[in-house]
Image (cartoon, rainbow, N blue to C red; front, side, top):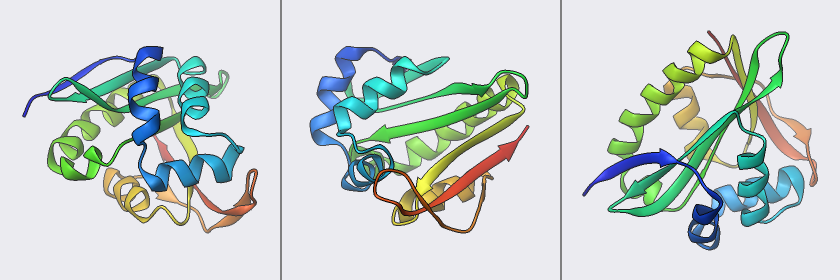
Length: 152
């Protein structure tokens, strides 16, 4: 299997959105009341940088980070993908360490939210070194979400 990381484009949205992981699909709707395609486009448009990960030349996940506070250099990292993410966990985990290190060079604080039901994502965020808050009602559905953050 080959793994490539390329600059994200709107073309990738059409490939990933219909196959988005159920946990990501539920999280996006609970947070902002949007479907997968809208969430990917919204994230892509508001990012300082965004990439697509291809497994065997098939777009399987998109990730990026956008500035939420220019004065404090705070960035909001995001990642949305398909079930291929879990099937290729080892390759994904190895690569994610690199990209978080890159983000830490650009921003003094990385901060966003994760749906408390998204067990796999919470475990991954903690493995990367993010701190997770206690769950609080958040977003469109007012479900429990946790703030995750990491200082540079």
